Image (tube, rainbow, N blue to C red):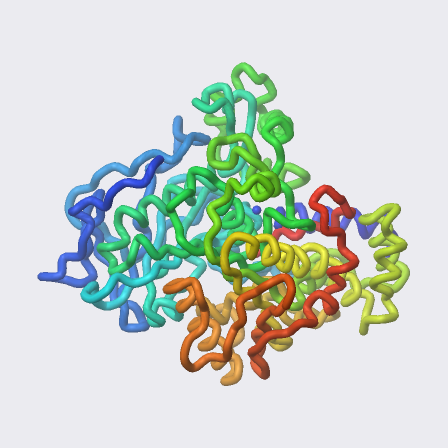
Length: 559
């Protein structure tokens, strides 16, 4: 495959998949379970909801609104309070995902990710809903809470893609959240900034996530949860967004612990948030593509564009890459600046990655959508294309001859630069202010999401999710993998309860310190610490200062 054709096919495939990112109020006395009647009927601060019995013996509540529909004049505005409703609201079916294109990109028309939202897509702007997995009864001590932010490059996915029935029986309440995606969630534009009280725009998706956290503060006690033991967690873009909330002044007090799985915003190699000026320039280009080039009428014009047209406009080219920007009140400082100046919500953190993160992207972008596999010559050409004057050093550190195939060499570059070493850097950074427990998921036989004819998937990006959230769309776990799943859900639940994953029945997990540099390996045949992580992933090779720029590998936007 020639370098220009490789660049064209990879860029086209990656654009289609998109990019891998109020004060607290006292809970109202009306937010309670109706213990004298039906345990699946609960009163929230805006009305009664009726859930259903879950397959784990607990209760499931789906499609609970946490903010007003962001439609019409509320498109590209901060989330507003939901209206009160009368009677008992049905909460037995998931709400629509936020607007997004379907990800049915495989050669056979199948989705590239296992979530239902990836199969269907959505054009429903009325999408700010959450789901709750709760214990069967609300008596006894309130339980810890996990609020989960889905991945998908801030352009795809839904809270309803995640099933909390494996974690909830561990003694916790699980909340999964929808938030605005793509241009609807992250568009900045001078016209939108002009109508904002803080003269800024963008970050609406982050604001939605914080609105959901405030709903938890007001209401989770009615479901048996403890508003003073809230863990905010996510994977991929959801992890990077969690990272952003750790440095957000408007998130202070909304959560007491954090879980980051395969996504950073504060470390070398992480996708850096745009400044407001840069985000507004990008937004102006998007507005012109959507038929709204005049800055004086752009806000009104954009709000009149049908949602299907908006997501089609954002579906190709650079406009498909979305994420937070620094400038709006929710994220006034760059994460690196906030950490350097101590302006962070330092909380205990469980943070990590998978051993073979980038193999998923190689299988998708190169093998299935790019005409691969790579040859030694096309691998070298691709590295030169992406890394410019630094390509020789990259090829020297990752020669094709050192790997079973050029595909695996290319995967190792992306894994180490974009995921593994940033995850380790996060642990080193966070550990200066709060306890950190670092992990690497390393099951080489994890059930794959997509066919991989030339790239063994190993522990690919997002492969650990099936061990925490049951997924009917992937191959069932083996007995050994089920045992690993039980260990992981126990670790995650105990961390949510106390900020420490350790407890009876699971191998000891040492707290991370830079000196010891011990990272917990999570694999079917071994659960325990390693000191070989940095060497395994060439972390000494990749630059540590955040200001150092290495080229841009294909977008790590993902699940």
